View 1 (spheres, helix red, strand yellow):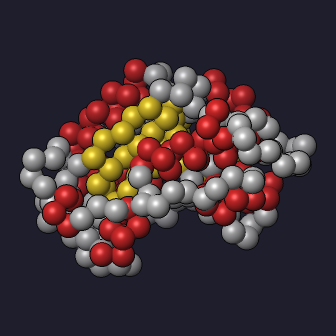
View 2: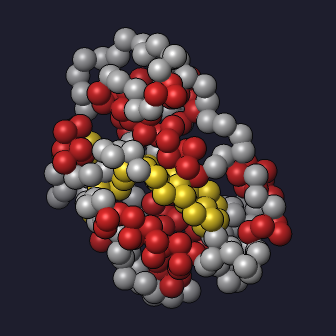
Length: 231
């Protein structure tokens, strides 16, 4: 089962430079939402995954069909723009094939750290690995990049779009596409941690004055949350 993700006190506190040394890969997942709205992990599926290597800016983006036996929530599709026909398209690769490709991307870039805005993306990954009873093949350390926004900009309205707007940038585009979410997450992270833009695309947006102190993030060991029993 997918457990709650709590900070792991046994893992080191990471500063911005540590994340660069660990070759942080920033990811964003779009999901089907699940046939039970309160359980997108147990009844839903990954439908796309976008990621960027924070150091090299190399990108990864793949789409897939819903895992066999999993459902969807129309509201989730309204957010990510996929249709029912697209997510059940048998000609699309499986989630398992997508995971294998993403493992290859992370290994090729020597990454030992994953990061996303919030916990949804990591919980979806853990649920997919459990579904296939597949050995975890991704970086085992994870940081919740949303925590940076909470520490520097306040607890309220710390979502990705709200954080972007606090930083004088437009919110995430609609529909939500995995690679766009990963790019915006990297952009917000770069501004908050280093005071500079990640992408030239945002150079026209002035960076606001930010607190001088740079937070340290508590890493999480993914091994504590991986259950390889197939569903």
